[in-house]
Length: 307
Figure 1 (cartoon, rainbow, N blue to C red):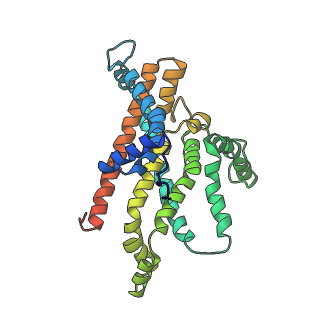
Figure 2 (figure 1 turned 45 degrees about the vertical axis):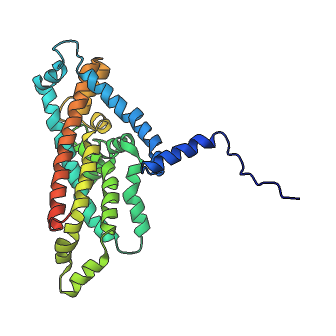
C-alpha cells in the first residue's frame, strides 16, 4: 500500500491577510517593527496634535478684531506684554541655577563615598513632591511666621521677618527646588557617559583637576548641558501653580500661563486664552531653536566639522 499524501496544514483564515501584509511590507522594504510605533503615534495625535491644532484655530476666531484680534489684544495691553518679561525673568535664572548647581554635584557624585545613596535620595526626592506640595512647603518654611524667619529671629539676626514668599523670590525658590532633581539626573547621566580614561590620560600629562575639567570634561559635557537647559527651561517657562501660590499673580509673577488662565477660565474668552497659549508656545520654540542651533554649532566645532 502506498502512503497517503502529506498535505500542509491549512492556515487559519486570519493568518492569510497577515501573511499577505507581511509580504507586501517586505517587498516595499518596510521594517515591520515600525508598526509598534503606531499606538504611540495615535496617542500623540489624540493627546497633543489635536488639542494643539484645535487651540490654534480657536485663537483665530475672536469675537471682535478679525482673525488676529486676540493676538493684537495681547500685545496692545501693557500688563499682558509684561507677562512675557515676568515669565522669562523666572524661567531663565531658574534653569541656569539648576544646571549650574547640578554640574559640581554630579561631578562629585561620580566617585564612591560613604552616604552616597542617602545623599542621592535627598537630591532626587523633591521631584516626587510636585509643584503644589513644594509651594505649600515653601509657605510653611519661608513664610513670615515660618521656621526660617523664626530661627533668624531667635538668633537675633533679623528684627523683622524676611519677605521670601508671595513675591518673585518665592516662585524662584519653588522652581529651583522642583526643577533641580530633573536637571541633576540629566547632567549626571551625561557626565557618566564620559569615560574616566580621558581624565586619567590628561592627569598623566600633568593636568590638574581644574585643567582636566575645563579642557576635557566640560567641552564633552557642554552639549548635554545645553539639552538639560532646554528641558529645564520648558518646565520653568510653563510655571503656574507656584506663581499662583507663593508668588504675586497680579504683579511681579504675572506670567503668561496666568494670563491665559484668566482669559479662558475667568473671563471665558477661549479665543484669547488660546492666543495667549500660542504666544507662549512660540516664545518657547524660539528659545529652543536658538539653543539647539548653538548646540549643533558647538558640536560641529568640537568634532572638527566632520559629520
